[in-house]
Image (cartoon, rainbow, N blue to C red):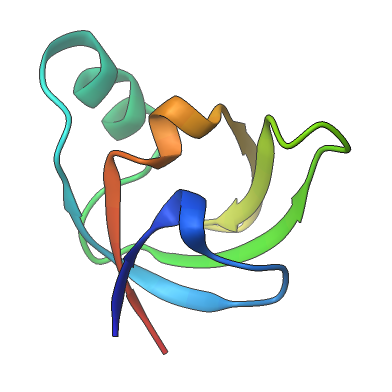
Length: 76
């Protein structure tokens, strides 16, 4: 099943399928290791809903929701 990273729930796992952003946001995500084929575990959401925390490539990463909605996932 496909969904965007910001739609995932705590504990859900998946693989990055595609980054649909352009320009600086796409470059920033790629620099942080959010690239197609990377495995992601959704860890938690901040109390007010932004940012979210994921585990990717062995480290914890916090992303804003407007960045996470640009990452298409293949959820297991």
